[in-house]
Image (tube, rainbow, N blue to C red):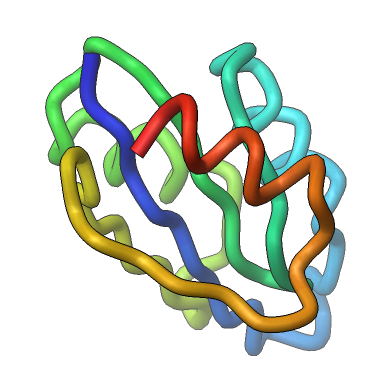
Length: 91
């Protein structure tokens, strides 16, 4: 399985609803949310598939970035123990 970092910038104020996007991210089952618009997920899906599926939950003026972080080094400050524990198990 791969671990991906997902971040988004929802800029279209007429469609400013995070609900559909957040529900989709959570549907991966293995996820963590270390920051307001930053998520980590673990999945077998390819990065392009993740990006394409996420983009269906946003408006055309919004932005998403998906980065594979499997096996990467990381460090945090003031991030909850739940998230750092998740990262230790999944990154």
